[in-house]
Length: 309
Image (spheres, rainbow, N blue to C red):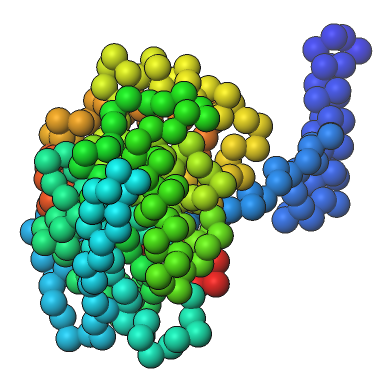
């Protein structure tokens, strides 16, 4: 028997053995991997973000025939004696179900604006009324403070709160918790902001995860000269091995493709990504304008406060 014949017999025997193995192995059996362990299920599952409304859609913030909440204008006084104003949205049913406590979204305006703009131009009350009526968002309180003279685009050192953070911790959050039926745990607080208000999310919300469980950044990010400062100052926090467990939702960045803050947003987002932090990155049409910020609010309000929905 020559070598060619021996090779033919070897191939025939091997084919027969493979056929017998296939015949005795269930077709739906999972492949075996030595030492393989399935990855653990994350404590906070990632939801599916609803698609943004098209830019021409006005129905999601229209005054529709649904139960309406109300907006109060309240005042508090700073340690320096300055009177500050804040708009507060209370959801439908707040006045009738007096035993119920509500999560709070702290929603921040942009530069050159004040606490009235999220209702006057963002139609926050209408967006929430419509979502709550459709069962797409939890009933929540929305606090819209005036941070125009205290917010900063400079990232603080950890443990060294800026003026805006101090006002939040000493005045804004205590005011809400003492005057309204709020959920006072970090699971009951989210912070969001547009443009300069995005720095409230980053400088205040990110540095105080013991108070805030969810962070949403609209059309914002650190300027090029501040980005290395942010990366360095926040490295001890972002490098924590359990950092993703501290965010109840992935950190959200929404920005328009023609937005003046586009590059700042993407570069700041990249710092989070470099540390393996779970994030949502939403790119929309249009630019630095209310057409986008209303849509980001509509989208994110549907994933906020996931427990007990």
